[in-house]
Length: 481
Ligand SMILES: [Zn+2]
Image 1 (tube, rainbow, N blue to C red):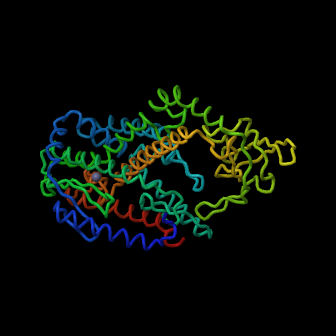
Image 2: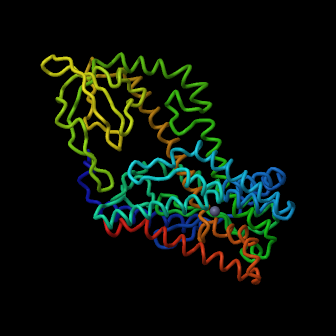
Image 3: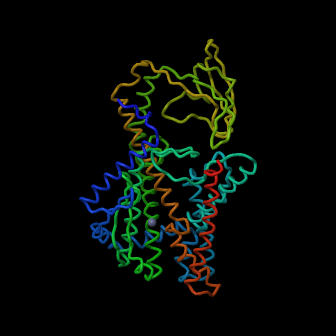
């Protein structure tokens, strides 16, 4: 057996580059791939016929791109669609109504995007930004908000996590508390293929040329997919064709997000997830059996170690149970509920939590703590199995492993897909949103009485500066720590 943990990180990189180089030589020699250093690019026109086939569904694609524009650019996107048909009065009323509806929709559906235990946010304001300008404005507003948090933290001598980070599945990034698992590469490929494919379909619907489609590899890892339009043709195309081509990519990711949430949900293994799988399969047929089988192997739970403080993003959060609870005490209940692996612990941030314990000397005690901002009490829970040598039946053990892999796969597929959608609505180039902004915001700049091309340039510059500033501030913690 090789102990992989003994291999230093630089050896991994050198090894990987060598493997990539070898693979690239093969790809070039036998399949005529283009090679750029460690990157290999596969160009083909074999998908063009497939794109053409999808492009025939013109009514569907029109509806789809309009919806994508409204969800991506909010009330401003909606106003763009009706600006020539409706009177000014009607447009203003519609603008207000759409803003309110979208804001409410956002608060309900994207609640999890608004949770941040450290940087306090005013969610109503962020939702309002979504209502007015969709993901395009929401991303800038959240990043602006978090950027302000970073600056005020630094001024107060505190540290903060960066607000934007490159995501490399399987690679832990210093200063970033979450790491995407290695299998998320598969998700990336699916997400990018759908995104680029839909750009392609809309290009073909507008009868615009596609030079090639392809895949970009770094070694064995696919890092990009692309549809290469005929740039000249696209620039000369009617505005309505242009924004549809650009909105279709992120729009397809939003659509995939909606479908996956409906079918599976981000937490497929919870009875409370309002998805088809969770309600029609998991809840009636799996969850009780799984919980009973699991619990049958458990003798009891105990307090493992107690922890003085939890550190997140360079900040310390004192734990209330430290020094007030004995290790090895048996946990009878938390907030009156017996522990079960099938449900999350009933502990909420800043709320009182009652823990019933049997201490090592046999005393039965009840202790009350106020959980900290992270929702932690500050002790680990140790599981004691009836049969410690083989806690579970091997078949059940394998089942649990497969189940957790599938659940984890969907969690990251859905999360990354939403991130790719959201980031592509950022209204500045090089993101698709930058191209859309130049078309959609143009009518509002008419009062300047400038030639259209100049107005578009002005919009590009304006959002480029806003975007560059918020991105740079959000990256500051990588530099300052
Ligand atoms: Zn795109």
